[in-house]
Length: 407
Image 1 (tube, rainbow, N blue to C red):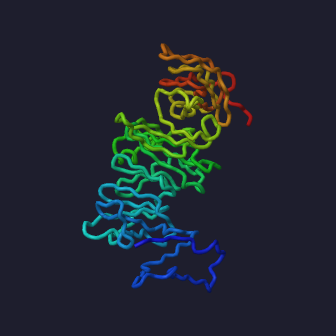
Image 2: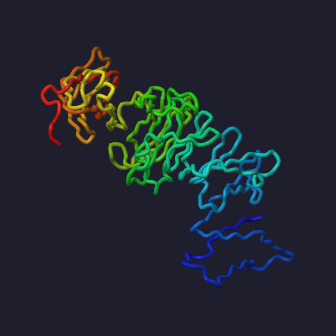
Image 3: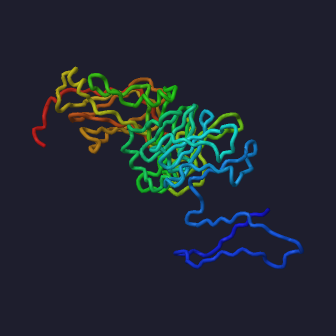
């Protein structure tokens, strides 16, 4: 037999009521010859495929597909498309845009007769690369957040960064990607933020100290004590925004037996320029981004918290942050910025020269006034880096003006 495909008509604003399809043989048939038309399927080009149908090959024959018994219809006509699929513990899962379904080979029937069960009617992904597999679990990037699925109910693990997640340009959500680095225990999500039309930033979730899916789910960065105090714990999920524009990401097996995290260059390119068309590999020994600076920073909380104010008898009003010591190693210049009372009020301090190894604490007079103050340390030059281990500001009640007295 032979399969033919052809364009029937040019684009039509509407299908005419008298439109006729004719099939006939051209030329003169041979004596006793015949031809049979088994199936005719018309596909409208505005929607050329059924987005809820999955094709499955024959068993042990991945190149052979049956046009009848190889179809799996996943919640057809619900207005959602199948975007991804994955296997977990001998079950096959289909991820639609806002729902999740599961099936399994029953060992008897062809795929078209396998039963399909709904797992979630709220969690799915808009992207064909919106699902990544970890250690016996998967992560799914949905419009409402990042979810971890281990065979039960999908659980959200990104609530702590929800305001940032909401800035993703979901009109181009089909371009986002998710990857899991099991060696470094990192989950990476690339997405278009703001007005971007392709992934222009990467959100990194570090789960280095969490061994199981249950640990990742149950350990948010901030814990609330019985007394109502919010505490940042160590063995928790840790998020970090990376200013990397990457259209794709994959864990690549190398010929030397190692695996590497590789990014496909995106827009804007390195240093804010055009796309480079390069593939990049993460390297702990590399201190620049293809020759451009890596903008690295760490921002503290606002000193002091209420419990410390009471313990040190600092009062609840203006304070003088007179001195700062920190143990930090690195290369280049370390920029220091103070934020009295608000992150909208930056005050640049004296930059500090870094060395590695560091032999003693770095000391700096700062004389910053405020009810509360946060600090940010950063580097932004090719080859510059820092490793901060201790940060100790000296604080006391403002000796000259404990209260401002005006607004």
